[in-house]
Image 1 (cartoon, helix red, strand yellow):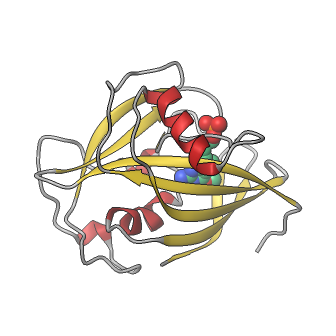
Image 2 (image 1 turned 180 degrees about the vertical axis):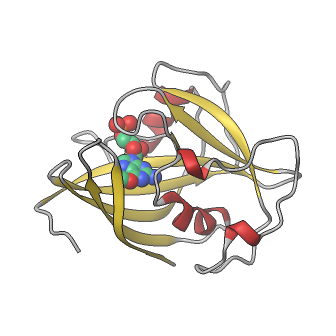
Image 3 (image 1 turned 30 degrees about the vertical axis):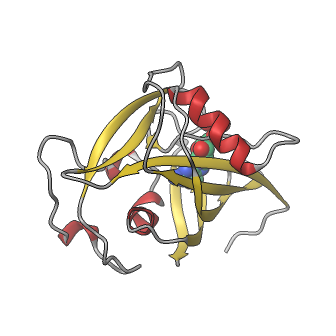
Length: 184
Ligand code: 6OG
């Protein structure tokens, strides 16, 4: 595992609606860190702000909505060849939201469907889980950070989870995931 000296706090928030189909709101990041990837809405926790306050502020700034966010996970990301700090990302979820979903300079909100995974365990292979609902695209794991496929099942199953992943930034500016662990 890589070592690190300082930690910076970030947030990531997801709107998750069970139904037919089950719906997950992601944002396509148009600029900055993680540009051209889908992710939850979030960013850096500012001085004097709690992670929960930052999560609500970022959700509003990036896609125009308010939601009763609930904390559901903590992730630690460390990089070699990239930023010299560890990212600690607090994960939040909500079922409901108010306001109108709005595309911003930073994010384009889009809905995706996800399979019924109420009984998911940390080792569930999502690829073999039958998906429901045909009208929305499936979760675009190929266009997401490589860690997401490992913890998204835990998030979607309503679990509280923790995890860590170590990355290496290669010469082409791509992050390769070296080691990881996610669990409940
Ligand atoms: P801004 O640049 O928007 O904050 N983030 C990551 N998310 C995932 N799923 N995996 C990673 O693996 C991530 N590294 C950073 C945290 C950056 C946003 O990107 C998230 C923030 O929501 C390395 O201020």
